[in-house]
Image (cartoon, rainbow, N blue to C red; front, side, top):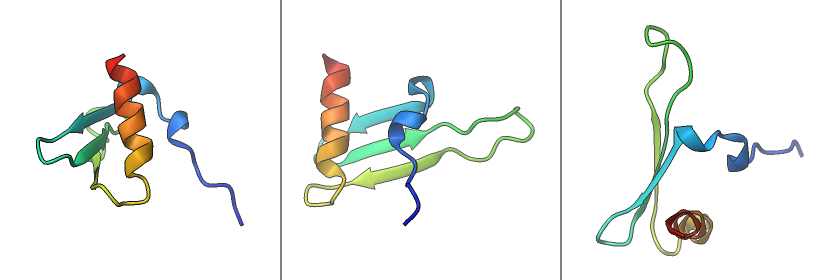
Length: 65
């Protein structure tokens, strides 16, 4: 099985994490590249019970300090 890319490989300045009032975690990854060639940002959402929810909640809480 090939190694999967880790979110730690994404530069912090391109990674935005927020928690909505309903508890949903939204992760946005800003695209890389020049303005004319840049793809749309990637956006993912995780709800309590999703396999990656606890991971992203932990990342969000560590940023809050």
